[in-house]
Length: 518
Image (cartoon, rainbow, N blue to C red):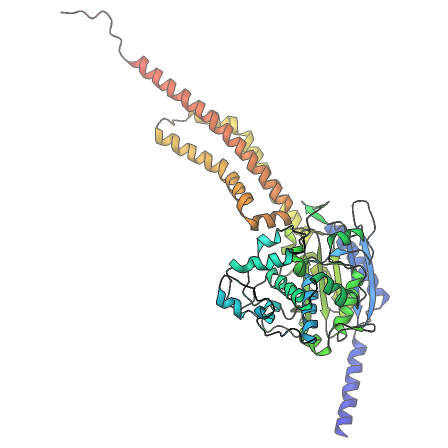
């Protein structure tokens, strides 16, 4: 009896709460969301964007915005976009499927499945487990060299994993979270080794097929054949279509291509114990474990966790050098949002509030969080300074520094005249003046040359912020030319001063004429 009463009260309470939940399919809410997205795209100059909103087991909003490429082709919900690090949650799903099948043990060492797996520390190599990789607590660092790879052959993934054999860990195994694509590259290799087929073939058969993800691809060529959106980069705030290489060696960590419609199917399975339509991609037990928040900041089993206005959320963001995407799931409301856009640059890393373990997809991250709040009738979150504000600040700084450089060039003749009038006569004075001149004009060019030739981290930054990199190269070249001109003319002035000093000395000597011999 007490149990029945308690159940009835619980049911009444749940019904009351449900009645208070917003109607996510309310037309006015959708109009507000549509208006918000359109306004945000215009202010941020986003070329193309696709949005999906899911509630329970239904897609309640699905729309494409803007253009997919320079021809003006319209974005639709079926248009494929690169989803960056959101790929990781698909790779994690593939691993958990093999756990479901009894082929992988989460707490088994990686070397059980990849006997050749090594890092620089041989003892640590044997301690890294599959769970450590999923939660990014293996200690593996982010590899900029791997990010720059353009390999497309079948051995690209294995080579990327084998290249870790000389890698020094940044933290003891299992001790702390450290974001690194390498974790998910190794996981992709494990999926390939355990399943007996390529990573691509496994994901196609066990994720894409049952979830009816017909516009999702693991090959760049295949995606292009199915109207992959063109990627853009912001150059001083203006979107410029850019063609960048596809990195097959990092495929399991960040290079899957998917449409908003397909990702809505994926999110339905996430919120319905692994089921989509009549298919199941994961057991309810493992799906529940997948959604358990990590004990500390970092990854769970393929997802990140945070709170928005005190509400627990599941989140993941992704970004390549020309695309970005974000997912937010509100488990209590059973509402999820996916947004992807075909433009990005490094300023996005600072354009929205912190909370993600990576800095991917920040503009879409802020938008996805806002759309979710609008869809669930919750207070709107703080969106951060926004990409447009950061772009204005960036452009003003670049413009200001460029003006200073132009002023410096304009003052060059006057500076040379000043040198000619100055009392720079001693060797020490000349050396100090030349050292100052070299420092002003040649340090930046030398630094830029070093970074270009030897720094993978700089090359990755230059790929994500090409306008800054291009500007720095131009400034370095101008300074180098200015320095050569200034040194040449200064040397001429010094030679003239030396000649004049010697002439004056010679003229001041007494002239002995007609001296007689006693």
